[in-house]
Structures are given as structure tokens and as C-alpha cells.
Image (tube, rainbow over all chains, first blue to last red; front, top):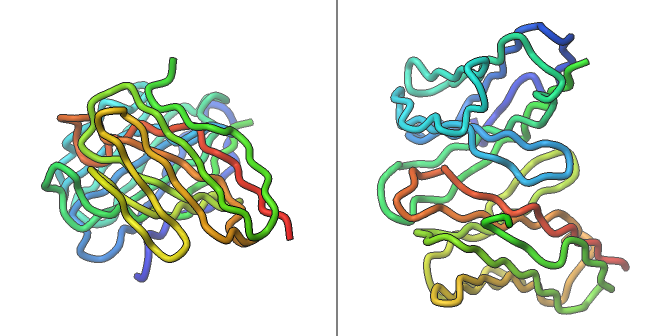
Length: 117
Length: 111
């Protein structure tokens, strides 16, 4: 596709429910990133994939959060047993390559807005 | 203290004004990003800097590595520039995309 696509755009989950958020990066992009943005705050890093390898998951807030990218393209962020504090926008981004000190331009999706009630 | 601080938090300007948004950081970095976020969540990458200055249209971004400071300037501002502008840094030795974000500067340009 032309840009990074995320689905669903909006999700309301009951506390305790599991949710899965999907990200389709720009075709051919090697690197994929997930961020969490609480209302009124800047985004916070969750995890980073280079192709199918999850190279950095230091930002995942708890073991209820799990991300995968099994074929090196589409990625899924799964949140188990959702809590109210998980309510946030979950942003996915991708970039062409993963090397270099400066990196490359990062392209963001529109985000998935999760509300846990 | 946040590792990335932006000022001002909110900024209201009249159309045509020259605008400056500042970003200071306290860690060693390999790159700094300026991002634009519109209501509804979409983020657009404006610049990625590791030194010096970059210009794109009416937007100019500068960085001073020694002073750990960057500025984003908008010349001849327009109401369509209204958005939240976010500074984000990639920590030295950090993985690509493991960015530390500022809280953003909300810009409103009045016609």
C-alpha cells in the first residue's frame, strides 16, 4: 500500500478482554516499530522488528503485551487481559532499512485507538 | 526531569508569523526527529537530523549537538500548520526506532 496501514482504527474492549492490533507496513520496509501514546502525552517506544526478528522489546510494559511479525511484513500487537491503563493510541511505523547511526525516515500509521472500559 | 523537553507547550500565532519551537535533550543522541501530529493521530515525519540544518519549504530545523538543543522554525505560518509538533531523539547506541519523545508543542495558527 501507499502508507502504513493499521486496523482496527478504533477498538473498545472490556477490561480483561484480549485485543489484537494489526499493522501493514509500507511494502519492502525492513524495520517496523510499535509505540503507545496516552492521551495528552508523547508516544513511547514499545518494540522494534527488523524483518521477522524482534530486536528490541524493552518498551513493552508488561508480559501481557506481545508482538510478532512472523513473515517479516505484517505485524500484530496483542494485549492480553486488558486493563484500563492500556487505553491509548497504538502507533505503528516502518522504515526502509535498519542500519546506520542515523537511521532512515520513519513513516507512521494513523494509529489504533484502544479504549478499555 | 524528562530526557526530552519541548517549549512552549502551547503556541498561538497569527497567520504569517514566524514560529519557533524548541527542543532540549539530556542524553547522547545519534539522531533527532521532528514530527507533526494532526488531530486524529496521524504522524508525519518532517525532519531527521544528526547535525547542522535542514530546510523543506517553509520549515527549517536546526540542531546544536554541543548544546543538546534543536529548533523547528516555520516561516509565513498558515492555519494549515496547526498541529502538534513533536521532537524525538534516538539515544546513542539505541536501536533504530527506540525513540524518546517530547510531549509535543500544540500550535494553533489563526487566520
